[in-house]
Length: 124
Image 1 (cartoon, rainbow, N blue to C red):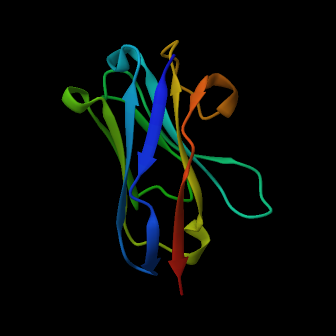
Image 2 (image 1 turned 180 degrees about the vertical axis):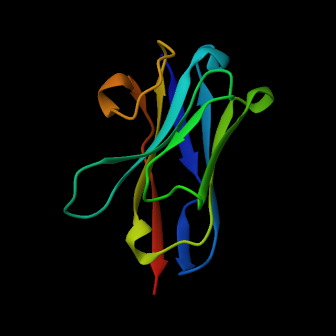
């Protein structure tokens, strides 16, 4: 079993920054592909960013490219999402996810473990 716990969400003004964290436990973190997804009220869950097992390959949704940065710290079994230049449309519950098979995908179907989510609210 893999446990994922997100933290770092909150309320921020447009143009501000937040850093989300996702702490993983239970198995070999270094072998997972990790990803961030988000779900706004009344909308489907959407892909935000992913990082492969080595940390050398990242991929972002067009809507966040250039503003968000995904990273991972192996010593702490933790993944991060640095969010800059936040916009009201970034408001959502943000979920971290793990693909223990180590594939790289923007599809939520490939991720077999999920965190409980953390709320990010961006005011205009």
